[in-house]
Length: 485
Image 1: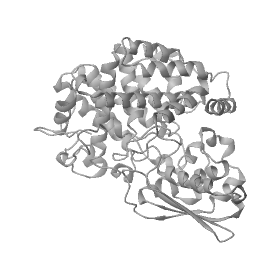
Image 2: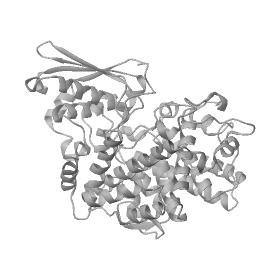
Image 3: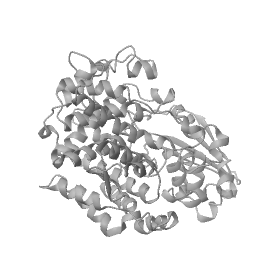
Image 4: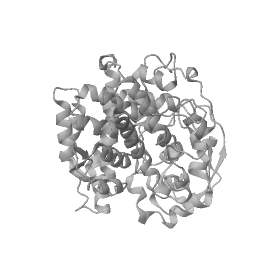
């Protein structure tokens, strides 16, 4: 994450730093990581499309013809419609990556926006990846000015700050002037939105947050290009985004980079489990304890209690209110239930896409174990660099087993390997595409920096139509398992 400094407003500093940064100044390791993020985002989006999760915007967008692919459908729409629809897919299963220090789901916003505009403008791979890297920098920098503050006030930071990252990406791709780009950021501020009230009943609205942010940034840049204006003080002003959403006056000079050599895209943390990141460490701890025990010690009936020690930031997201978390009524609610996910992981030995099928939410064995789970707040020192947790399981014999996960899998301190990310892509894309077409799409993403690489990628993406019309949810989940075998 780069520093931003200089005279003028925050918007002007961001535009000066990023709008016209030469692509040649972005090192190969940052471009490589951007490719991995694009691959991860598209893979999980195709799995969601195959399972008919988060497809509402895509169904509407198919009525609006255009030149930009609607992922998984084999059809196309306008750039704004596609950014919205594809961003919704990317965020639909909570399987998308996160910048932990900023607590931002950056890829689900940036990748749909970049790909949509790059496809419309027929951008080369080098410029496409440069735009993506710039978007990650802006998203991380803005998020790190108030990490967790938006969520505490009931807003998702991805939805509130995401439009700005998408706007600078769009301004760069559309070659706006610096003055127009500042206006685009100001316009994006009036598109910032995203309530966390979905937690009350597990409804779908969070799925749209990333897509809304992606299309808002694109539309803001398009408006600025034709002369529409927005406030230059959209960030630090009295009624700017930080003052209005979190009641905070920001100091842009306090947000320094963690390393002069590290780019924000390299700090992105992909997820091994399709659920809220706040419950990953407790699931990981459960699986670690489970792996240490003998098969005869795994009966959930013998478990007396499961105690979790977690940072306070987790509690309102995945632990409270306990009566709802113990018996989630929707798949999306289950993705934000530590009780359900831990119980499911203990009983099944894993937490996968199929773990959240509606018909599995009310299994008595899972509900019984979920009722034995409780938590205590402990502000663990690794948070938010990683999302840590400690879990202690007590069995009827009186024996206890504990696991402390200081660095969740996928974090910078415990990263997923390239091989693991490739495997995740194949498992996700393979749900609806099958192995051969998923392999071809992966190769096109890996080859983005090659001559004509972007054209091959756009062609492969357009033809990547999933088999949702002929494969039911249960069959798609079987395909997911078969692809992962």
